[in-house]
Length: 485
Image (cartoon, rainbow, N blue to C red; front, side, top):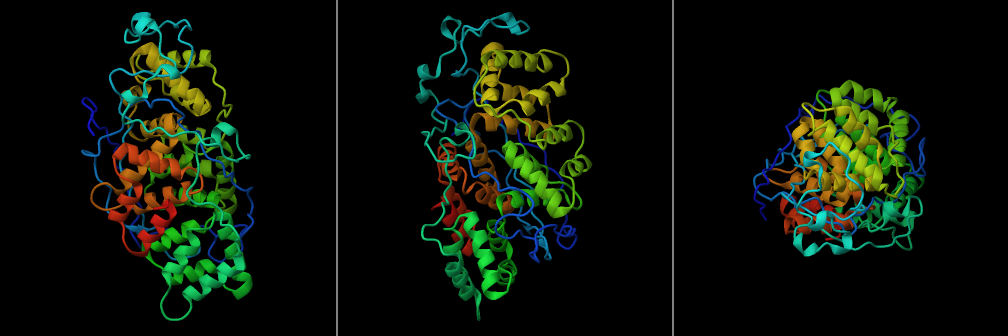
């Protein structure tokens, strides 16, 4: 699919992770007794991560179409998997693939706030853009979604996720659900038999791992040690290698630990994987971020904010420090008057002046709830006849641009953001396996069903089809089993 006038704007490359043999060893784990540094069943020094999902897109049109499949820089060559705590590494993760912001059509309609709210001054012409008949923007019920053929839409599904506000979980679900009639000891025995003797029965491992929830995998890990006096992770590492090893070990990490480990891995050694910092810190809920900060301290003996400050700089550093506070407003109700005022402030901090007031963008995008930011984007478009994502692209560059756009994209449609990241992890020559594994594993019990839907609507192919063509062997079997292909 192509959209005239949408020049793709890739992000700049960033320094890669150190080559194999130069990895820094992860500091000794704190509270978890496992030799390999993985937490045991039942937690550790941090509370369990919420199992809830993220706000869905509802029936709103996105702020535009999505980038055409062609014309983007391909993913970097794979470089193997990162080193895991407690064991020698086996290569370094490649750089993340480039990904662009969501392109915007020249004129677009948004649903949302009351169109009769008086417009604050300071905007071009001081009046509502003429493309709205009668000077009023349509409400959601008046929008013809057929005019947005590329916009991914999914119907909200009511799920029982009481740990988070309803709006944070409505309409999302994972591809992996807890197995019925679960027996940790029986599963541990099957895994033991699969690894015993000459060769390894990878299919038996795939069948168990892909059909158990993360909590159930922690119980299998504990049962294995109780039954055999051996560490399941160490046994798996001795039997597996390469991408399959990285994927299996990621599945056996508790979600909070996996995020904390990914952040640590992204910042240790020479160079920093900024895309990983953005992907995790700009998309997680407050509770998830607070849990990550605590886990990072307890497991690696380090302060996440200090590591961010030492590895980043300038406005990008300030944005990430704001993110790791975990203090975003999560009230799901929208204040339309505030949205109008914020839209005006953002315009006057960027397009409406010479230069850019970066602190204004940071303050609003780091503190407002995602539904509130969506309303602000709609108000900005109505009142200035410009799109906020495009304005950020004109006013910022580099990683701070990427981070701000990630926040806005999540406000519009979080599953679509992850679908785009998955697409660019596999597009072109080679595969960015670390990004592919990280997103598939971390979203598998949250919103991978919706991510698959978005992927199909954005790129006219299924996620499973692209994974099958870009991977091979047991690694491909396990990935496809997780995405439910």
